[in-house]
Length: 220
Image (cartoon, rainbow, N blue to C red; front, side, top):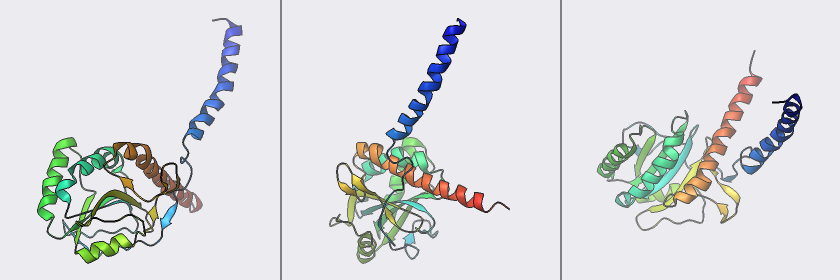
């Protein structure tokens, strides 16, 4: 390789590299944005009964919230989609959790579902949290999200929601398809892959930046 060629090759790389970096960051619309708050102060769940008896809360957690009511037997596909595309990817983040809202009496069905999820991918399901309540308790929690969506007669729906550490509902206020995107359709692998994965990355990055800033400002 001649010296002249090397010179022009280095100049080409120096010119091209910044452009590639710019295009990489520009292509990710939400990479450094904040995920909008759509509803503030979603009801907490400390008083709910849980499968293990351990307390569960939204405060200080990043939560994927689903309402499956008494419809658990019909939710296997939703559960597998979420487990494969979202939970496996993010469950090792310290404050991340899934919370699934169920009607009282669904405890045995949960154990069946957990076994199916374990046999499918062998993932540690420790951050899948199932909570149980009456119809009124479920309705009140759902209403606190303040979305235009509706639960069906079984107190269920296919959408899941992102709740931040301050108990706020996060979503999109400029979605190209829906305008305001309150939740993600767990029956749609495309929506999970193309929107939900990106939005969870955004909120995790937001808290990571806040944590780094806090530690930097508090170094003695």
